[in-house]
Length: 235
Image (cartoon, one colour):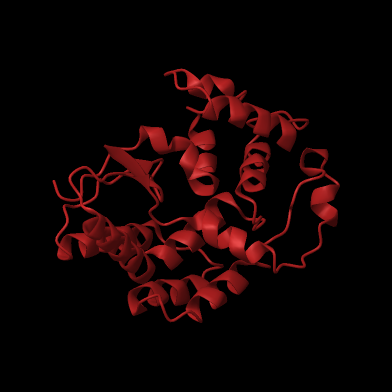
């Protein structure tokens, strides 16, 4: 039996901190596409975000070195550093006795959510797998991944991933300016309830467009989860 296991959920941490934000909503509310939705932000800028990550002891020094360097370059993280952090995460799991997770990439973006086959695992093994994944992701890649994705796909720091995605689609001119959150949510609901191979046709934008894939991979990667290679941690 296959089950879906969360690996590195950016959405979770963003959702948990957005309620603390008191940023102005006037700009977002002026955009009809965002009217009536939660447009709170989880950071005031890249420096604010990176500083908060540097203050957290759960991230190892290799990540913090990358983040400190990014502060000197307007928050930009070189792709080589981003890729190296992900490779370190994958190797961390190997060092704990698992097979190497597949390198799921879209437009050069590593995927946070991953399909994990728990077939053959007893409960205690499954709990240990959860703990090991959490430990490896936090220590090796989480902070770098969050900063990299945010700068690339969510420069407005929207805490709601749906808002971030729709904003990205607008910025890339992939949808008409009158494309609203309500429309996206209706399409998303249809997509989630469609088990056919043509489920992505439920969206009015081309999900195979390079920019659209980047928007989804950086802001709402779970949409692309069905395309990922399944990881069998015990082979």
